Image (tube, rainbow, N blue to C red; front, side, top):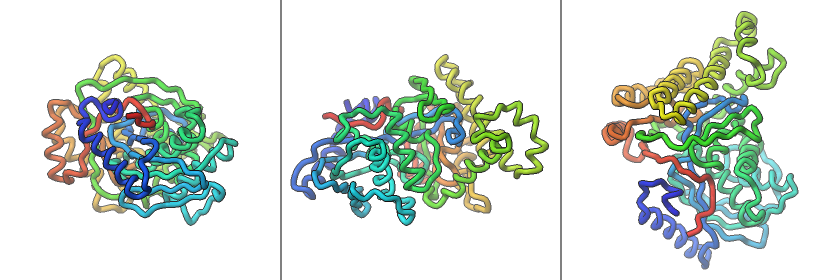
Length: 404
């Protein structure tokens, strides 16, 4: 059971010990053991950097780190969430008004998810949840989406009889992040975490994407390095990518780039140059090329053509650097992401590396041949610290209850 959640190479004793410690923490504080245990994974964005919000294509994987929750229901309509290392938060399900002063907070996410369910006329109620996490916060493995998915699944299990599908939970989570948290994200993070496994997602119809399961990447490991910095203050930079792409689409009378054929876009480059920045046009070019790379990479994984898959990952990274321009904030002299990528390229002989997640700060993703993994881990940990270099496995299940 635990290997399903934490991977074939997981140390079951350590995993079980972590769960038991959380249960004991709950007992000491609440005077009773929790009724249920839930787990919500982080995610690795393999391909499809900043395309989901314009209805593009992505390859995403749930990975073997998680937010773990010990949970019991309560009858007073209060939601109490105590995350290890943070102050407790309390939400009353009778007061779910959006408050812009709460933008960027966990309170906003809990209220947003509860309100999304309420607006669908679905039953909600209170619960107490104690959380512990080994998901990098603010470093690109989507700690916020893991938290959102966790809260959605707790409601789903306690009050809805498990009736919500993975995509319904993802859409509810995205609503909370967009409307209550104040971040205009797409659906990549929430979908990958809710669905689990390694999947290709086509967001042409965002709330019901085409989902193709890709199995595993044999002979290679996913290694995520937190190069430094935090995503918390970068929302305006993420928002600019989406708004610039959508502004270009608006030139053609469309809402998103997916609705604009590439040939039409390319034919009007001259007119676009008169109206938009070069950066906006470059970001649109990235969108079109990235969709093609996702399809090629998915076919390569399914056919066992590892070289073609790695080439797609490497080209995606270069496109993010040169066209999407999300590897550093303008004027940033630290450039930890760019440095991490360039150092990685000097170590890896069989593999690929690219910016991971939203970018501008935080993490990079390396796909490294198993025979090179230990040497890569050793060198990167010397430079970036033992706690900032994470070897992950593909997790086959999304956010779910752990039934031990």
